[in-house]
Length: 290
Length: 290
Picture 1: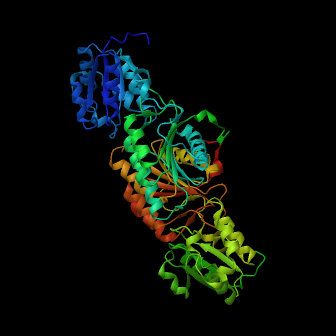
Picture 2: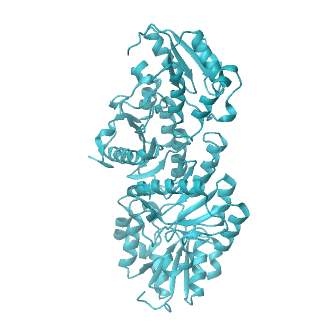
Picture 3: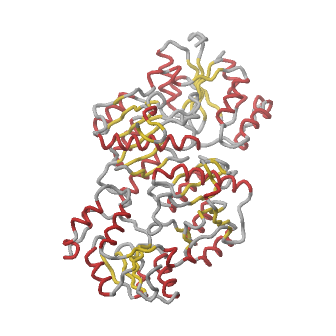
């Protein structure tokens, strides 16, 4: 990084535990942190960092806040349930002044939306960083997180799931799938991983798939993924939900998936007898496991 | 067909309207029809054909019924919600006698299960036919079923959905997907098309996808699909569910998807302003629309 860490770091916080954890990691590394929460998305717990709030689309207010705090470095962190659209562009003066830019960023469909938003922020002189740059300890490494490792049958399911996610790569969808006994049971779309796990439970309970083979949740990044936004995340809630649904374990792409509350994640996995393992997608080639 | 149509035709009926419709089509073609319903799966309406019933796994009883009726030709038709497993193999004598064969067919995972079941039935001297052979009028042809046709934006979504389904081909999953505004929103797994459509509605209602672009349901057969079992089906319920969910239309693979209650399907599509269109997957090559 060419900018010294004694510069303040701004965190634009969406939902979930990740923004808080990233803020803690950055502060532990000795950096001053300015947290701005998106109202309706971010957890109230970020107020521990003296967070200020913006409405969806209050781009002018966000940029004013960052300027007042002398922040040039910005992280976009956390889940976003609602999607910004033209109607959510709020009416402060700084926003109205930038409206042509904002509308250009929001038009053109969902593909590349976040890339265009980053471009807009960069055109305002900000540098948008990635979580791995600021908090590398949150990145999943190769190998098991808890005591358990996947057995041979589960390793085969993991390889099949990774092959599927590689094949889905060009389509900008499918960061996760569930595979059981060699069969792909569920593929993630816009609904997210929690709903994916719930679906596995539902089809299994309804007897639509065999109960003899326990499923594995496989999670990877998209090849076109911008690491500065939207890296896949797992955490204790993912583990507990997976355990409740009857999954055998979770395999996620090493280096490209974040683990929140790692201690708690490991404890939840060990308590439930699940494996949580970082795997190398490079081991899958041409849609077939090597 | 090398067997004359004056031979009786047996229909082993799973759920939904398709078994009844196939039975009607075969009878209209002058063929004597023997309907056997799978209890817990088939609709009671098949009793209009004097249907007899078997439990899941009562292979011996099924074969005895077919022998008594002098049936050599058999159709397997209709949805199956539960999946047969070892525990569902019932205890009549004919079943027990064939137990080694049956267990061999049921073991080895879900992949190829139905192919192995067909092999078992063929080894008993039966010929397993496909719905297109017996009731060609049920097969979706190229072009619109109702008054509406897809507009340019929807044709692009259809092409993208077909490309996705082609890419999913090697994985024996994903007979359907929903695409909206160029974005793949939902992919079908073991949960079926109804749940897929419901998911589209849920993510749209929750604001997880833009409401500006209406989605398109795209449905195709799997490349390894045995036409004698499990061809994808659409019908008036599919259309009504799609309309309720806010979809713009349905595109399905011509020649490989069945339409039940076609008149009613067309009427439902026209009433809701949806398009229902048969499309040629051959127009998609190498994962990209030509």
